Length: 116
Image 1 (cartoon, rainbow, N blue to C red):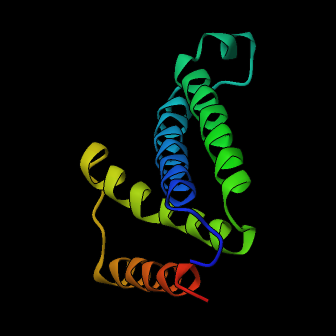
Image 2 (cartoon, rainbow, N blue to C red):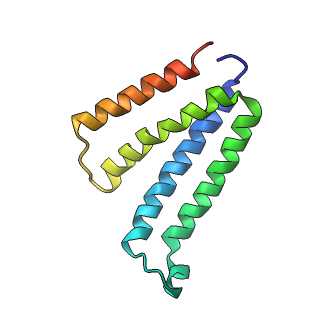
């Protein structure tokens, strides 16, 4: 892990979870999205934006405590969270091809986040 602390890794993981949940809210917002004054009443959109702001704060804290070259690739774990959320919330089907891609991403994150 080099100079990256465990707390930094946990913070970036929390950040990716918040980003992924924000994506779910964006998907919900998109169902009712109309580019008009009604936009200000699309609460899913604002919840998503709020969650993105929290994710950004977690990421900033993670970057303060760890190395950029270790922390930033871990953002790719959001692909895993979004896939799981899509599966459970939207009942999307996830093909073996997609699961293979996610496994490769996790392996890549593990390699990049490993000891240098």
